[in-house]
Image (cartoon, rainbow, N blue to C red; front, side, top):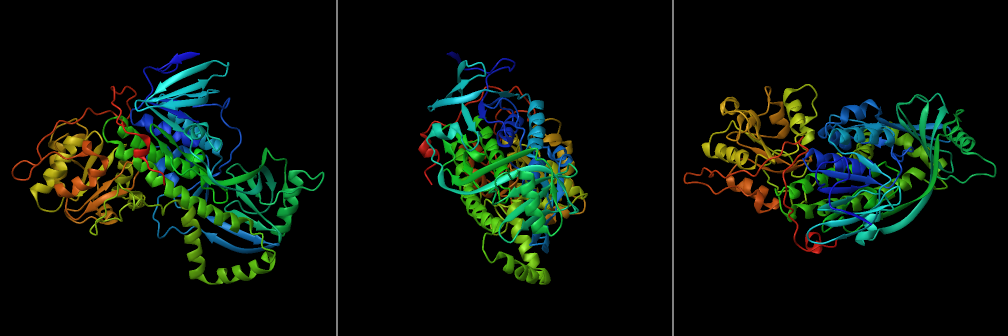
Length: 603
């Protein structure tokens, strides 16, 4: 057996992270780790990219994430925007529910219908630009780990094996995950229903501007329009076939009955009949190994949450793992991955179970009850709007909050709710402040925003010290102070916080005060935003003690320097920084030296 502790040929230096699985979740993890300067090795046991698409919807919060990754434009270019959900039963239209994001501001008030293969293509191109190439046909067969690293046994397409040593391993290898099995993580839950999927040309006069739910009187189907003209994703919740009945004929018959018009389904390009599971792991982290996406939870496709949830998990994990690998934070930070995401997985299982019931709607009285119920919904405006916000808001991911996270420090005087999305304040297109925040959220670092219009040299000294000491992982920005903008611009060039250099924060453009209003910042107020765009802390005044409390969950490496007499923090040498685009990071110390069970207890 060949033995290796380096990186495969064609890649300089040693990888810091081995990512197993090159679907959308693994690609997201690889992209964000590489964007933060870590060398990544990405392997997948499949011979090449998948030809079929399990997922077809990218919801608003995932679009915001792709925006932060700098990838949303090519993703949007390949998809169709969907803003409605229309229901039919036994030949009659029941109701059209239009997307209503009035209470959830976002730049992307729609779901994007895009084949998973297209999403993966965008991500593959992006990781390639960062120097990461997918190694197809390389399969993980086993792994071992200790306090210092992971040793993975890899099998190559020619049958040769390789033992590969790496500090960290991320398993994004799907529902049959080898990583999960090797870690002994149980997949708890139950089997559920048998459904069928098909991608096919459909001849119909229905406008392709909405997702359709169609009930025949005895069962339900769904139709999702692709960007490609005339092609649809079809879902059959009761795919039992008659003898000699082919899928196209069966789907044509059922859809025609439910829609009350002739529908002709052509030869499907791809079909799948599957029995889905509703299961998840109790932990997502074991020592130096992690699982994400379907490797951690499998569930019904009813609300299109699987890929979206996996992308969010990969993004959540990548910035934390990068900070730990770069010695910018301690093991406390890595433990928060499971602490934050296991509850999300639990909630997802519950919501998809409900969605499965509603989508298939097997009740024998459905044909009679549905027209009555939805006639009422259609005619009572407040009820219809409430359903629109409830249903679409749940699928959007925009209501997800980390208010209970160990990384969140709540304060009643915060401008935005603790744990909420900062991207909500960047939703106003064309406004200079919103555009400035949007650009800032693409930075790989944490962001500290201070409303510098208030009095007090001590508060300014806190912001300047934070920029000087932690500029390699903390971007410090000001709003509302022309003097600060001038001083930042004249403080010198270079440094990790931009034109202002290490001695001063940089201003965010906000000429009309729209951004300050959206962030809820008054003079002297501040917000601390995580690299994934969630608000971690804030308050009415940027005092040293308040900021120290907010940074404490990151461990002692994130501490502020002691204050000099007079309240000004003493200067402290900053740790060596990395250009976010660099592919040549210096040697980095690993930070996890405690037993795995200490890092993340059983939930």
